[in-house]
Amino acid sequence: MPQCAVLHTDDLAWHHGVFSWDELLINDVLPALRAGRALDYRPPAWIARGRQGAITLDGSRQFVIIEGVGSSQTSIRPQLDVIIWVDTPQSVRDSRDALRVAAGETSATSYANWMSEENAYMAAERPWQHADLIVDGSDMSDHDRETQIVLRVLPTT
Image (cartoon, rainbow, N blue to C red; front, side, top):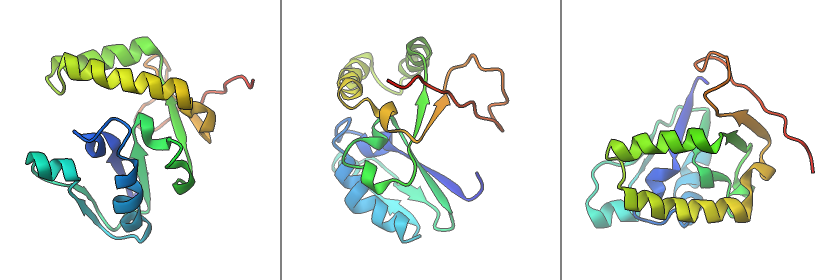
């Protein structure tokens, strides 16, 4: 999408808690985004642990995608215009995550702890049930990943 920026919730969650960063988004980030201002934000954990840089988003954007499993958690949902869930099979997620661990992006222990919290969140909140749109995140769809998305229709319960 032209004039679109992406905010990665992993950056907010860095040494802050897998799903306890929602107040940072609601109180510190979203007001600037909603006002159309550029964002140059250093989360408290970045400052406390000496992480360089900041979460930056250009002020000339029209859209912001807030990316991450917990981006539609209960406390945040009222702040969102559209919720998109990327539905990806467990085997695909596991292989992608194994690459992240192998690359040193996270340790095996940190990953196991993260997934423990993520699995509990998924079971409790079932975020796909609150989505306005569900996108196929598998590697099996025959489409151009640069220009096309595949929507999935899930059975209603």
